[in-house]
Length: 110
Image (cartoon, rainbow, N blue to C red; front, side, top):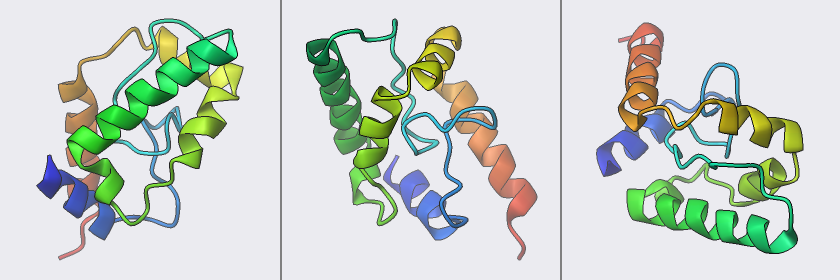
């Protein structure tokens, strides 16, 4: 996934990195670690933050110069955004990555 992170970073468009066209999510289209339910307590939010951040580390997203871990905190504080992420009902990561690849193909000007 490191090459995808590099490609995404190279084609970054002024803070417009989003989980999908509809949702900002965690602030990165490659962070597809979605919640099963909206966390209620501070402890639930901390657990979800840890899960998302660990995914970011393991996938190489934290190496992106545009990655901002505070975007995870902002999403955790936005109940509407979290509800929408839950409603996605865990789409296949391959679907989200395919959407990103399609987006990049449409927007790369060689």
